[in-house]
Amino acid sequence: MSGWQLTQRHAEMLIASGRAAEAIGELLAALDGVRSLGIRQPATQLLVVLSRAHAGSDPGRAAELAAEAVDAARAGQFLLLEGQALTALAVALRALGRDAEALGAAKEALGVHEQTGHEPGRAETAALLAGLEGTAGPL
Image 1 (cartoon, rainbow, N blue to C red):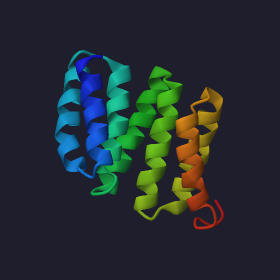
Image 2: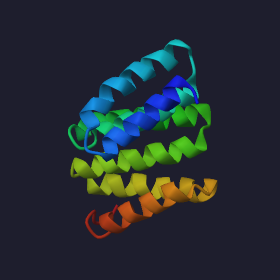
Image 3: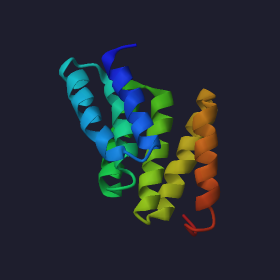
């Protein structure tokens, strides 16, 4: 496992334990490192986790990071990461009260997760959709 992967795993544990602020600094340092090497896939993955770290405290920044991750995943043709980034975007948009946009991103994410067979992403996004449907109104 490489250094950025260890950082990602540690950050995910910090986020899950309610210590997202601690994860942000680690993630930013790892992101700078992989970007300096020009490695796009890990950078995209770290953007997704960084978005999740910001989701509770700064959903606006989380949405920016997730949108950047969506763009990077599409540019690199990282389909699995595209689904994860779209889910992160939907979470951030929901936190911002932009339920209609969140619903659109979640539906798109679900389609990607179903295409890739990524069951954890599909399950997370399906649960998010269940909470969004009926709150966003017509698209």
